[in-house]
Image (tube, rainbow, N blue to C red; front, side):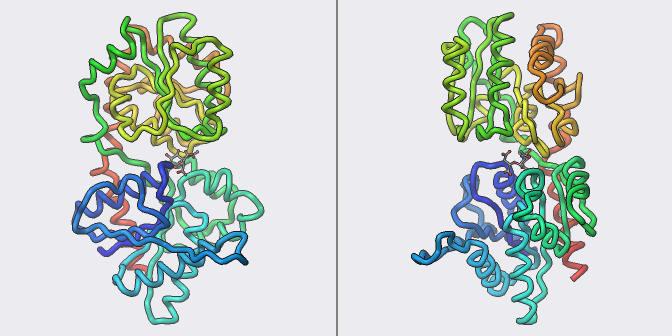
Length: 374
Ligand code: GMT
């Protein structure tokens, strides 16, 4: 197939999933055209089936808010027509699904029918999409899509609950490249970070308020009071200055390290004993899946789709949002020497069910149905 992928090209989960999907599709022989405002961060290798088309937004003093959606729709029209695309797959409803609707209508006037598949990733529904400023457009453009997927059953449920959706929504979960995300021998790194055999706790996120990074620090403090431990924080974002201040206040500065936006996150996960995900909202929890693939059990909340990934008592443990005391108790239980090996093995085994080879054919089938329907 000749596939157009529209996404946010950033480190965010939806952009990562879209980029990894495009790469996997290209390796399976499809021609994949990325359409976005800058090169996706994970589009980092050459393949003769991969193409990148930048959306240029001409500056003009009149525009307080440059109309990205219009430039994107025009670019989609151009690429669908000239590259003879079979399907457009847009990741994140806002503004990609509505821009795709506009492109589809313009192409119809030129005698071209292009099916549009929309994938809902989470905050496009649970936070931003529900807002009255966007809701009518989100509802309309989902209903106008030829295929709709969501990354968890919980996100599908929430979408039906808050929007008047007439379309079937297919659940296609996040997936993982198990060749990249596997436990590697990084014993020298572990010896440097935890020289006395301290347990290593890891959190990765974009440090936004929904991630509740304060809870990460409080959980760590609770664990550290009981056993020797270190905390590695990967990522960056708006809450980081506040979290740095909190670390100084709780007095474990020497045991907490901020690693910033690290690309090779699998290297850090390879030395971790426990992954912390105390999120308030999480449609799936790709960061937890990456940890599990590296044999790291997960202490998480029960927010959104997380329990579809983190199986309580098997791959880790699940608590109510904000229940730090429970997460401390659970972390100490999982970290016990007689429990940890079984949790690690189960985390990897469950991660294997989300292998890219298992999930990408679901998208291919979804594209085919959309193509057959138009
Ligand atoms: O988690 C974020 O803040 C990034 C966000 C995004 O939109 O890029 O990630 C969402 O999509 C990921 C890929 O489908 C999911 O794994 C994340 O759980 C989801 N984040 C939230 O729902 C908060």
